[in-house]
Length: 261
Image 1 (cartoon, rainbow, N blue to C red):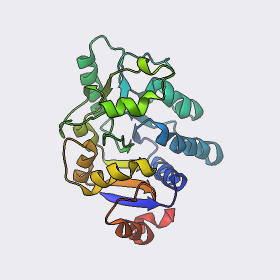
Image 2: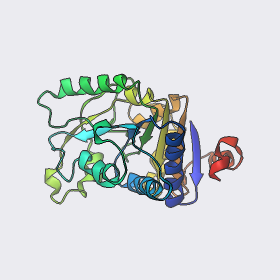
Image 3: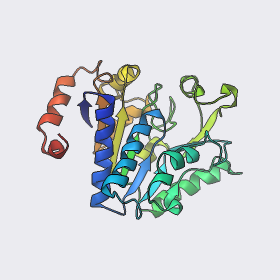
Image 4: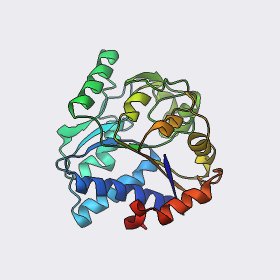
């Protein structure tokens, strides 16, 4: 795991967008794993801007989202399909046939989870998986006690997740209590993972995810096992890290980051 600390949330989001853009330019057929949430909106806005100003080409890439609420149709404004269409897909030149999310309306949710895993395999796996971090320490909707080898499955949402996301619904009581999510094991099979977290409310969970013990209670700790995982955070989210000075040194000195400095 490599931790990169940027001075502000804007700088952190910009770096993540530029990493994605670099990989997409290097491999136009890139298979991207995507995430949703308020933190990701700035990343997608940057990618849309790069598409419009620099011609960043999405026409040949494919995408797989981490998760989707159970019981919400794609047209529902709270669904993650609607989120992705609004913030990215409908603003760039991506082929919507190559954008994939779990079907939260499937009659057989277990079969849908198997189908999604098989579809990822058919695309030869995910090249770059973008991740956010929930306050419960989850990646995707892998809530506490998610097995570190878990696969795509239906999952009940934890109380802290419900509290965190309830404000996004006009009527909080209509928020689904369950979702389909890629498993921790599915995420760890991506060739590269890129996690973005910003703000003081993420400081405690970032410290536990990055520097704490690996535990199924905090699924993000499993990323410590990944051979190529980059965590990008701002100074506010880095406030409780013990080795923050070392992480700052990495960005300032490692050759990989020279083009981004």
